Length: 408
Image (tube, rainbow, N blue to C red; front, side, top):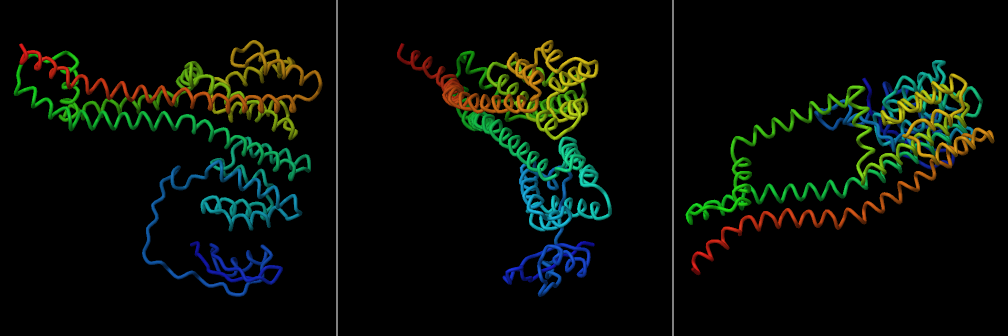
């Protein structure tokens, strides 16, 4: 069983450093500290904090985020480039990362490397943290004897992807927040305010206007057992939808649909093109064979439409066709990327051209996000005003009728 140890060590400059390190036994922890270049002064088991049960939810609490992998890769590349061995670099980083599950993964990779496995083979055992793209890049670096260069390139690739995802999430976050606020306002008004007006209308009698009757019907549904039926239907719909998009045909149709809406469709398309070009460029520049690179790009695309198009490119390349020819026959790829790929093949600089395409589409994503923010902000404010205003008007319409009756 893994135990946490409190240690005091001195570094090469004689400075005293204190910290914590997990290990199976005291000798193993002392040996690991020595491998990290420290002189152990004191290593003792950490005092128990009492009975504590840690709840681990697979895929949630033990998740390793892409940003954490990107930071690790950048640090790993720097240490290897500085002359440290892969084993020692992994030992140092496994004790420094904040995510303990990533630290445990790195320790297992280090043990495999020390047991004789190559770094790519050790990484391949942990697909949740290091995908096929990552493993293939490292494998190409091992074959070509340029592992430090490949790690730097991989780190840059991951950093760009993390930043791209952050920008897209940022563009989606504002409308989600506004829609959530609108939903909360509607629920509060329909469940708390409308019933008060309903009692008032009942005492006054008379025929209510159609908008008011619709509003009261919705309110009655929300405050009665019928709301359970609505919740069950919504939950069932979500489950059915998730199962549908988990199928090959469902995922293809859904990803195709995401590229069509006038606002978010272009953003999704440009982001997919940036990922396609960047991933393919990184693999080709690392020396991965074209067919294998295309296969990895298809699996790492994150979009079924782009994956299908990439497989079609792979089929054409296998038949001896240039990259640009099958791309030209597929509407997924804009004319710009087709022309750039064609020029890259003619000049022998396909990886460089693909990287330029990626940079271009990343810039386009930035511009699209800025435009979306400027457009959606007033649009959503208007929507909020219309919804709240419609509810208020529906509540006060009967009042106008009663006032007219009184005046007459």
